Image 1 (tube, rainbow, N blue to C red):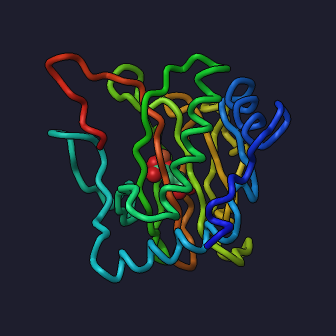
Image 2: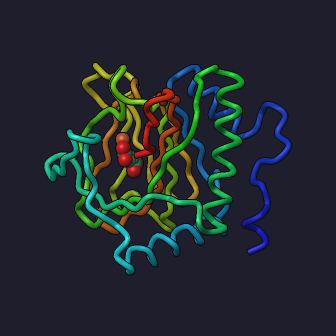
Length: 223
Ligand SMILES: O=C(O)CCC(=O)C(=O)O
Ligand SMILES: [Fe+2]
């Protein structure tokens, strides 16, 4: 439990994992950091996701917001459960994300305001077809983040996140294995991506740093 409380990258002076994430976002639009989160934290988050699933806390994922909300098996087949900051492991994860948010804002001026995030479980065979997390103007999501919770993942297990940094490229550019502790960040409006079918349960936390779209009269809900 003690390790959960230790900041993974405290005191970095410009060359640590957090800085590499910011540099990647600035230069390529995405960044991948293996082993960003400690095995202890990842195990705690994984246990929590599995417990919540047993308690029926996950629902079929939906596409779109508000009136456009729809469930579409042809596009995605994962199950999700929103983080609510109620456990030490979540608090620890969200604290790190907050550090990252502040660094991104101070270096890239993206005006990131908050984070919404959910656990996701892809059952064997589940996938998420190529998509963008936000379209210009219609969605406050600016930077997407994904944390993987799968120990002992091998190439034969499938389930890679496929990024398309050049959206028009015919051949894919980059596959990321969903290995425990890895963190992936990318610009939500710019990087198409997909989740390839996995052969085992694939656990992750997907989140989005959002700009503030609230006005005095309208409070933007965080999902
Ligand atoms: O789990 C992943 O690797 C990515 C998930 C994703 O693209 C999404 O939830 O929008
Ligand atoms: Fe996505």
